[in-house]
Length: 130
Image (tube, rainbow, N blue to C red; front, side):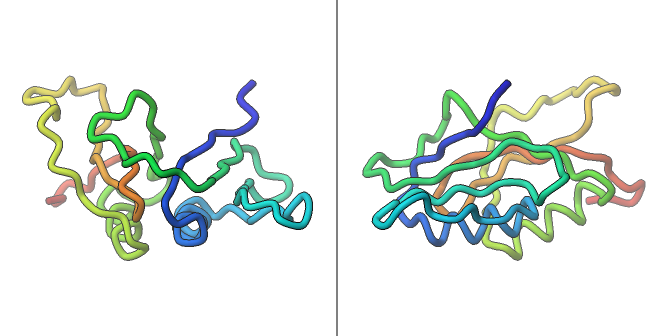
């Protein structure tokens, strides 16, 4: 079982605000004075994996070896995309989108959080979607 994912960020407070709002997660209390890690976890009674953020001097990778995949859930892909963009996510010009996606695969969009960390959003598109 994966207990937590850890992200290196240049501004932990900003990253924490974005991911808390994006996921509906809550910030875990600091473990001790001087604890600089920001750890977000699902609300009580909700399943999900915690996300921790700590200061990193490394730049975000254009093609990261590991990234987070989000599902739009009950919202359409475009509704959730608009919500995440309003929170500070940015579209990524992703040259690896499939040119002929299989009909069983949900559409997806590649985004970057305010720190530049790449993540994907998938979901269903409404018939008149962009």
